[in-house]
Image (cartoon, rainbow, N blue to C red):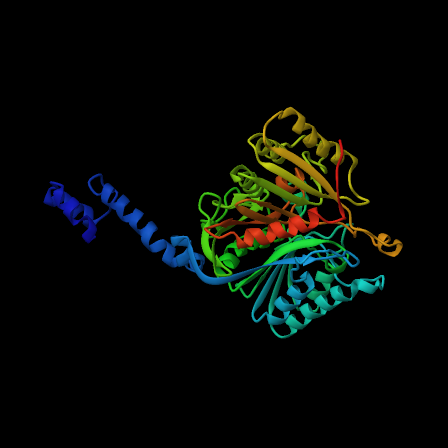
Length: 467
């Protein structure tokens, strides 16, 4: 109580009253303020020390906002067989990076998974890589690596049999999120790995053999970066809690699941020896503890901060909900792109074109082109191209393949790598995650993402959408 000696001595208390207070109870009026202050001190100073989870979450970089890890980041791609570029832009394949992560895992791997289809049952010639990844997962589990899987509930889309096999073999713990129970609609659409609490893969690739050889994918792998991995682990922990039997979304998430890093306060760190500012965003909003940037807000903020250009590569672009009983218009991203063009920013959209493209999508995209006419002499402009992955008759027969499945954006000052299609459902009731990477004096990482976009934009597989 040394802290309060001067205050206490200032009170002109009668000796009898003081003795009475100390002897029996602190409920008496004269002692009540002291007791309240003492209780407050206990809660602030000592209670966290009794909370194991609070101890685990108390990291220096969370207080300072500066990560001292020497993190590395690489762009990761899956290029479908037969897709050939006249370009020098090359990145590691998803398959090679996944092998690297699995073979190097020492203690733990946490997977956030939409669906599983690594073990092909058709015998298709390019399916071997998926089976190899599954075998390496088995090997990791057998050598003692703790594997946890948070996945979307089994459904007609996927029975999640790969995860069921791993669980039955005692090689993985599996929890499934029932979005009908949690939110009334939606799915777990997230795709990320956390390895040994230090390495991260995040991107568009599903746990599907086709995502390695027959679908165009883009993601990032971040290595030796416990700061970022531990922050993403908080997202995984939310999924893990929501995968418990009978789980419901809590009205308020525990303090230890909060993050300090968001649009207003990004994490400062070194990526490939280059200063950067970064944070993870997440959807839907009810899944986000305090401090976590809502995914759509991260995208809109990135668009708003652009000064010269915004380039978007997505499979689907629809400013409406698609899967609700009563769908509604949802213009958040559409409005942000139009506002950017109106203030002079050049906007480029590269959208996937395949057998499952929606008719109304082209009408929405053309509405962006019509907006150019409304801008008159303003310097901004919106361009739209459709990216088509060519297919042989055999390739065309592969179910849900041969498509540009990318979900990223690059501007003149930052890159955004996500897991969500650009339609309302993916931000309102579906789980997804994004990584925002901002410049801090050097643009090499942002430039590397821009180089991928420009390669695809200039390729013969991209054609301009006409009004």
